Length: 246
Length: 323
Image (cartoon, rainbow over all chains, first blue to last red; front, top):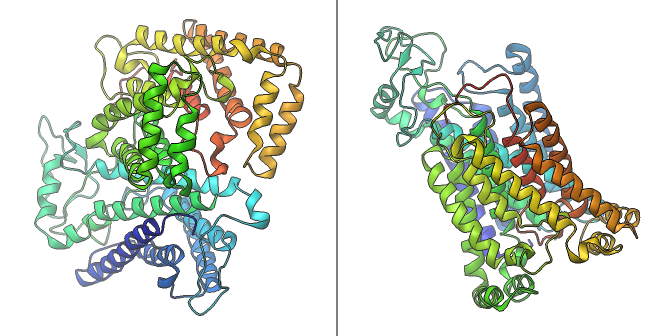
């Protein structure tokens, strides 16, 4: 890998952490019967493990060829999800949780394709051994001139990272700028919000949701902010890998 | 992209005890521009993590190059910084990378946007001096085709113009004027683009071979197709340097005064500005030299485009935005 070893180790550690958290998130969602986007969490586990293996070949458990197959499947799955989303909600719609847009699925297609690109472009150092060792070096051969694609991946991933962070920042208790009534995403079944001069019916004050969330440990473990952090970490790490390979 | 699944019940059907969560709010126009700026800062930070910058060559070779031609008052701190960076290459570069990544993430994270933008201004001014030798403005080497007056100056300018506050008075007709007012925003635009027009016909830039030599010398380290593009462009302007640079200066001057013209005409000059920004980025800056493993930023092209978008007149909709 053409970069400092300690840096690769650092990013690999972050990716292992992301994969472990995503696995924990799946378990927690199952344990507490909470919803989670299983396909996204599974993808984060797979990508986290794969990227850690690309950065530090010693922790790569699967041969390269298998990883390539896995990411073709992931890309096809999210392409299918894009199609399904567009058919149900249109290009500008949001899904049932009123949060995910088409861009969520497109980003995961791009991430899967970026992984595929990196596997295909990187030069294997010891071939496809049982450990699937591969060195992350600059692209070689025909791919060396084919730099427009990774650049495109890079821009999409960076945009996705800042977009995700911006979205997560809206839920931050420390963000006080627009402290006004926000539209309700899902209404409580038993108790509808009561309107007032500052807070019309159908809206909640921002603090209400935070107070309700803070009491439940499952919500803390499954907090959207943590998932956003995982996504940002994954995008940043993938960007680093793509830049190293440019 | 964001996800509130952890805070929501598993079914969309109402159920007892369920709670509500805040809906995602689409970013306003200025916020979107801030996010683009954040992406560029993030990319800069990531570029700083390339292997070359962890070597002594970064401090010993790259930094001192910017001192060349500058008066000693400006050159000495650059040389001194280069030596310091070379002696602590890993530590210094790690700091540069983390700092720029933090600025990018800070702008994107709403609670820290102001702090990150303010920090970016200070950082940009420092880098303009030490990393870019004041963009060749003092040494007479500035050329808009390869990034004058220094990309980081445009980062600082964008941070000021996209500052998340609104001056009192009536709603401005373009986003860049929201924080500083229309008069100041227009003046800043004029100074930037008029200076670019001036640099275009400055000294060596107006020689018949100057532009061709500049473009031809940029092929080193580039992929085949970019190098080929450079060679063709260099051949096209060979012995026509003066005519091309004068034409460029005229276009830049039109863009500079365009901001004072009526909205529709001003927008037309902004289109010219955007096309120039893209052309400069591709031909003169080789996509910011991103493919050479030696780029520290995207160079000025994309920033000029972003700046131009922030000056786009919204003829119909002057409604104030949230952020």
